[in-house]
Length: 339
Ligand code: MG
Image 1 (tube, rainbow, N blue to C red):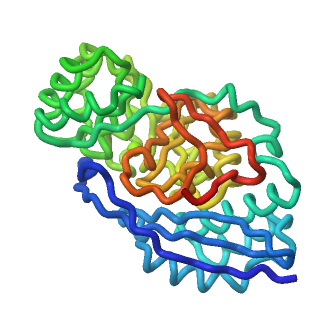
Image 2 (image 1 turned 30 degrees about the vertical axis):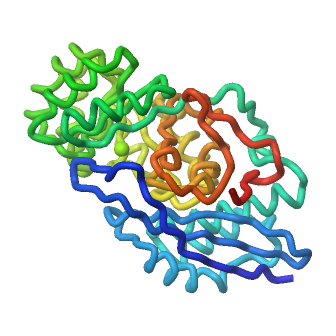
């Protein structure tokens, strides 16, 4: 019996405007997707569109309508279904990933097992998740560091003309490990000049210092960098990995970029084959979106799954982050319920 699709736009608000190198806001429209099978079992997923990758809640709804005729009659046909989705709607990772999550949720519920268990994973081996401090005034950044007291690792957004001041503000407020994400905001020269500063402030690794296409610049920077360099905007899907492998030490996987849970697993395998580190990140998302990514965290080295923790009106309960520790639900499928 055919699956039926229901969609609903959910508006999330962040505690503070979430600002990165290319701007920011405090209101995020995401799309909640429900697939219902003939027995009335529901699989849930969430699309978390990013305008940087050309998606909004409206384009997600539009693309979901195009994807609906390609839903499988049997939800267990995950591989074939995802291949049809990618052929019918290339790009649009957020829209496709919502259906992928919903199908995986449905399969787990039909089998009575949490997704991590179907994948043979041990939730206890998941890395800690960092918590992100967005760009702000020194006073407000100090306040955010205090608010993040429960998180053992911080990620700091840079890519401004006052990056040293930002780092000093954070470092003066805490001794915690910090990671830096420049969100493509630096030139090679600027990045090279920042290396000793990052080292002085004890930064663990550097994410996406340069514009996504500048892999030559990235390779030059990497040769001089004492810190590991992780690519995010430069690496969308598994086939990007051979291209970035000689220019970076690791990749940041996001479901909204790669478009499916199975593609995320392929990215992990491809990155490992190239000896690379693997990190998983997110957009501003509810716990429904975060939980889909959290299920494969036992396979990665670093996690930045703070998307739901940044919001004040998360409608779902799923994977939680307690003192940085990612706790995966043990209920079948994604294990997400409404709050
Ligand atoms: Mg990033």
